[in-house]
Amino acid sequence: MSDFSVDKKARCPHCGTTVQFAVGEANQLLAPRGFPTGYAIRWVQCPSCQNIVITLIRFEANGAHKETTIYPLGTLRSPVPPEVPTTIKADYDEAALILSLSPTGSAALSRRCLQAVLVDAGGTKKKNLSEQIDEVTPKLPAYLEEVLDQVRVIGNFSAHPLKDTNSGVIVDVEPGEAEWNLDVLDDLFDFYYVKPAASKRKKDEVNQKLIAAGKPTI
Image (cartoon, rainbow, N blue to C red; front, side):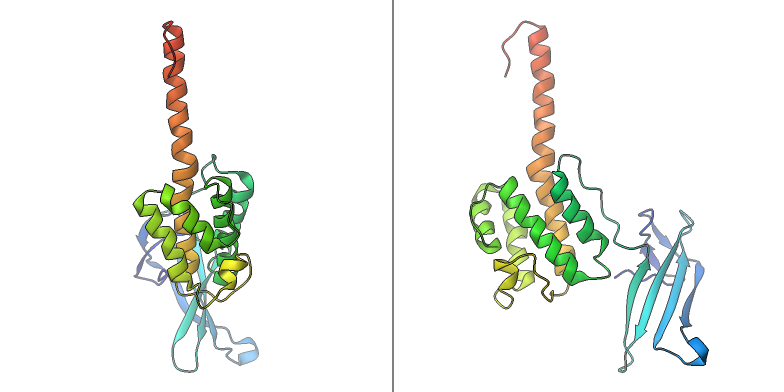
């Protein structure tokens, strides 16, 4: 997770600019009626867009602490390309929105989204996610074959078979798994939807010129 502390550098989740936060306040202990709760609030202001980022800090008994971004919700990711079907986009957007609040829920949505892409664009007929990956990878470039295989490796499917047989179920996630799934989906969106659409547009433009010139189309 990004370190949203005063005098630290991080990528602003509002505007996407990597900045050094110079204004903010840290570790304001939540202590209703004078009794500390083990939680604190931290906020910083982005010098680029002037928006604030608020995180909730939970202090563990062993001295460690866990920090969760509570405003703005979600992570800063590129918008889903318009070529992607709306039902797939909806799952992706929700998975990205809850990533910081519930990695397990986000991963369940992104696995379901991944299956939808492999069925819709990859043409797989298999039922399990692992088998679907095996079926589509021979038709993919090497870099996509590798990142898709990492979905199984990072997700530890052997220890969590429900991720394979029932991809939408809420199952504990491995570190980094939820965000990795979204990164893989970004690559698949580009390969399956964006590039073919761009190629078709170029072909249509050439054909229009050929037609205007009275020549055969391609």
